[in-house]
Length: 72
Image 1 (cartoon, rainbow, N blue to C red):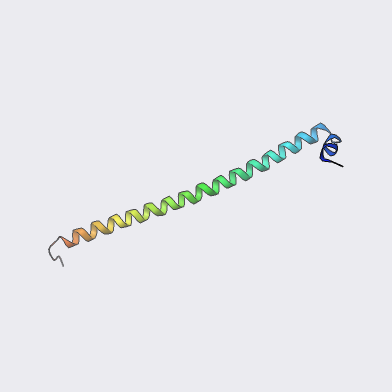
Image 2: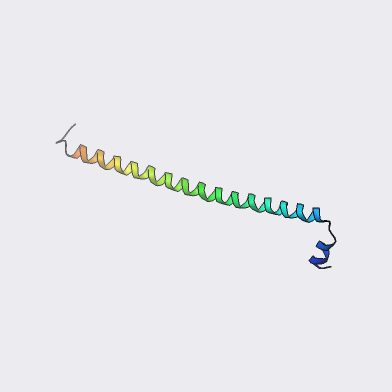
C-alpha cells in the first residue's frame, strides 16, 4: 500500500486532525529551538557586558590609584 492509498482510505476529519497535530508539533519544536538560541545569545551578551564592566572598573581603579602620588 502506498501513502496515497492509505490517505485515501481515511476520513477527512482524520486527515485534518493529523495536519493540525503535525503543525502543532512543528510549531512547538521551532519555538523550542528559537527559545534555546535566544537564551544562549542572551547569556553570551550578559557575560560580555559583565566582563566589559569589570575591565572598565579595573582600569579606572588602577589608573586612579597610580596617579594619587603614593596613596597608602
